[in-house]
Image 1: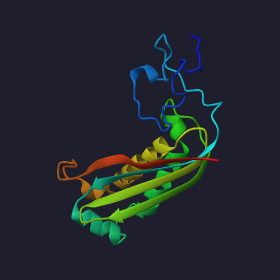
Image 2 (image 1 turned 90 degrees about the vertical axis):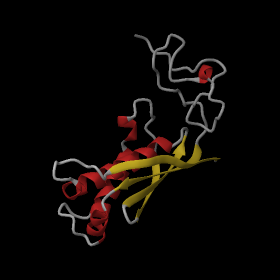
Image 3 (image 1 turned 180 degrees about the horizontal axis):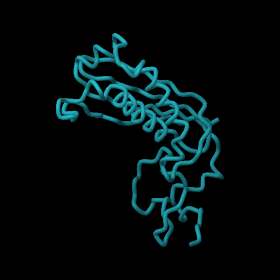
Image 4 (image 1 turned 45 degrees about the vertical axis):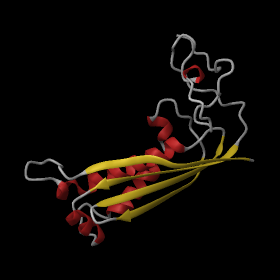
Amino acid sequence: MSEDPTPAEGSNPDPRADSNDGEADDLTHTTDEGDVQMVDVGDKPDSERRAVAAGEIRLQSSTIKAIRDDQIGKGDVLATARVGAIQAVKHTWETIPMCHQIPITNVDTEFSLGEDRVELEVAVETTGKTGCEMEALEGVTTGLNVVWDMVKAVEKDDDGQYPETGIENVQVVTKEKHRK
């Protein structure tokens, strides 16, 4: 199977760029034959880019109290989730098939504890040819998954289920691009 990394004529060379036309004819992750391909961003200029994503995990209020009081048996929930979020950002290209490996210049994580939830916001910065919103999303989803893993023993009900636990509202909050 041959791969043609050149985008179709007239198409946006990077669907992760700031484009809102969304036309099906502009899809560049497939060839004219329908084969999947990675977008060639080689000719694009480097830009400073930043993306922020956010999400939350719903938990029992007793679990939130245990997190606040550092009473979770596995250890510091938020410190562990922060490391997981950062690791996920750095490895996004390995888990999202069409993502480019990009140079991450900064990752900020911010956790907020509510009455029945942990909110996480991840900001990612890069200087390169393509955006970093997928990296921010990966940071949020993995960070929240780590929270779940750290608290699952206290979140389970008597049947071993998680009726009050759920990851919700994951979204890209902002995306910025500034030409150098």
